[in-house]
Amino acid sequence: MSPHFATERAQQQLLALLKIPGLSGEEMAVADHIEKVLRAAGCKPAWLRRMPAQPPLPPKFGMGNLVVQLPGTLAAPCRMFLAHLDTVPLCRGAVPVVRDGRIVARGHTALGGDNRAGVAALVAVAEAILKHKLPHPPLTFLFTVGEEVGLYGAKSVQPTDVGDPAMAFNFDSGRPEEIITGAIGAQRWRAELHGISSHAGMHPERGASAILIASRALAEVADRGWFGKIQKGSKSGTSNAGIIHGGEATNQVTHHVVVRGESRSHDPVFTRRITEAYLLAFERAARRVRTCDGEHGRVEFFSENDYQPFRLKDRAPIVRFTRQIAGELGLATKCVAINGGLDANPLNEAGIPTVTLGVGAHHPHAYDEYVDLAEFATGCRLTLALATAR
Ligand SMILES: [Zn+2]
Picture (cartoon, rainbow, N blue to C red):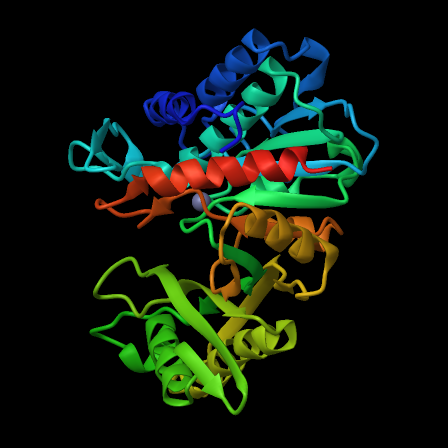
């Protein structure tokens, strides 16, 4: 272990951070705490910056990302370390307690180890570097906002705002041995289904039901194998219709229904094909649902890329560097690709090669969420080694 790295201090930091509420859009108190700790360790005010809360962040966000840039004492390209500040609503009111080598939530809440474990590792490492004046290349510590509701902080990053890093390390996972080098891409879509209204008891034949259009379309999507887990030849992905609302009265043939959903795949062309399967099914169903006069419903369909997939090659400099440094710490690493979106997606899309590493956070977004303290300590040592390696 590095003589400059106190595991106990990092754990204290983690407990302190877990106690601070900070749902998406409400990350200010967490950022205040980080600034206070880093200033006390010798961080100059000019090295700290809060980015403005402006689009693409949603309205009502209290702040943008917190960026901490430490000028290098070694001549080498800039390295960036990032973790998201926000936790999910299930963590509201969480009280962390240490139990059997883990931190768990005492009451009936999630813990928020996703992602305060990542935040704590970054704060502890930055603090150690500042306090002990450890030699390092130019370093950027990026604390993102709004990850849980759409990777908003990461989507707002301009490489020049964060020191044009040659590589970035995102801390937002469990086992330190696992290097996430690939993640899925996703589209979101929304279908506005317009039927034709009529009295459902007196003249149902004069109506065209938007609820019937939605039902038939979704049944068709499922029958054709495009709902849920999708496998078409060598191509795979997932889809979901997650939100549906519409209807005003039981005695009225429904004239408007909105269905919202998503499509995911590691192959962006296939992601679009999944979305298209929904569009075509809604259009076919709308043409089939008719009034007695032959009038039929119609569809307005909107889709957008949520985030792009990425897959870093095993020989990419960042992957080789990470494996080498982890190997020196005795970690037997393996590269994995996952089916969830990460802050690493928009950063890789912006041209900053980014891997995601674990700091002991397990079972995110669940009541049995916990942080494994041994893994957290290992994750912190790996972070320090990556930040200070020549
Ligand atoms: Zn997370």
